[in-house]
Amino acid sequence: MSSLPSSLEAPLPPDTAPASAAAIPASAGATAVPTSGQVPESGQVPPSPQVLNSPPTGRFARLPHLAGRSFIPLGLFARLPLAMLTVGALTLVTSVTGSYALGGTAAGAVGIGSALGAPVFGALADRRGQRPVLLVAAVLNTLAVLALIGTAWAAPEAGSFPVAVIAAAFLAGASCPQVGPLARVRWMALTSRGKGGKAGRDLDTALSYEGTADELTFVLGPALVGILASLVAPWLPLALAAAMTITLVPAFAVHSTHKAVPLNRGSAASRKAARIPAVVALPVLAMVAMGTFFGSAQTALSSFSASFATSEIAGLLYAVMGLSSAAAALSVAYWPQRFTPAARWLVSAALMNVLALLLLVPGSLGGMVAVLLVLGMPVGPVMVTVFAIGGLVAPVERLGTVMTALASGIVAGTALGAAVGGQLAQAHGYHAAFVVPVVAAGGLLVLGAAAAAILRKRH
Image 1 (cartoon, helix red, strand yellow):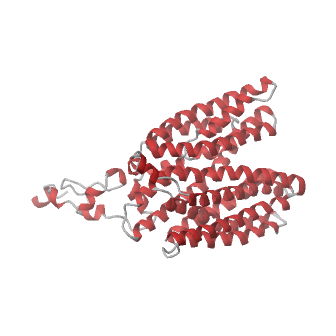
Image 2: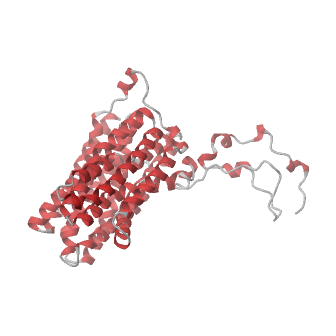
Image 3: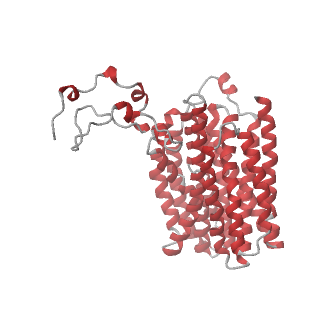
């Protein structure tokens, strides 16, 4: 290798370093700048620091630049245990007790616990910071899940209604770390540092990714539970969920992005100014409607698939809608900025309302696959947009509370939709059960119209 001229051997003087290099911490994905004159063996001179530190121009390529390369995989896999918990409790308790009723009760306890506990953790995160709250939640949830496994295996010997199992299931749901909602809070804080339209584009991109991550985990989670429970043991999915929680959630908690989130520790006057406005009820109710859509669709699909094959393939049918929804959620990052969140909500909900009627049409599995593939397209954008509007109307200091409340709305709505859809499917067949997601889609449209009217007045 040939030697370099002396002018290239000396390190760059401090005053020649680009301003962007100082502004981007190493944890935020900035490329290291060489301080010596070494070049690769090919003899090519390394790129200048300005080139190495120039921000990426692609929409999704900017996300690692904003948050750091490790944040995205951590945020994705740390939320997977939540997606495994409900189905895992159902599978384990049903397997060891032989009772579908007890399994369903345990799964319902997980959902109720999650719906009640999530806003509490969100409010605590707003006051105390995400890091300590997530660390405590990770420990509590791991212990609760292990308690659920232990009490479930002891349940057959009890010979009566296993109160301990239901209590452990409730605590497992209530203590579950709310990684997804709190990740959205971090993205909102990180993207708010941008200027003009760039901040809005970055936020749309981040929320599009988050919507896709939710869809993927809630498709992958139940599938992973089914594979592990059937091939190995029914307790293994919950044990794996506990192991992932105690390792991945703390890593997410201490990630440097938590420092970007402001805390609500001000005076009484400032806390009063940060009170959650009544308009937040609209996106929360929208998430309840979205959850009702999901829960009733799952139940109706179970009844539908049982008419043609077995009810077990309902999960595969539901996954079709999840995959198209995830792909559509990613596309929101490329929608024009002039297409406002209120307009996106209205248009996507209207399309979802029309396409939901197609659920009443198919008379074959192939026809239902086609309907679900198309129906998923507006679902993802609606979810992304409702989360975005929740962030717009919430005070900055209460974003954790609002985001976790939105997530709780989905959980509560899913339980409601599954209960109502199940009753209709049992009494009148799957056609009656499919009416529930149609009504839920209509509710999303009405709430979107109300949100658009209120936002118009506010602006």
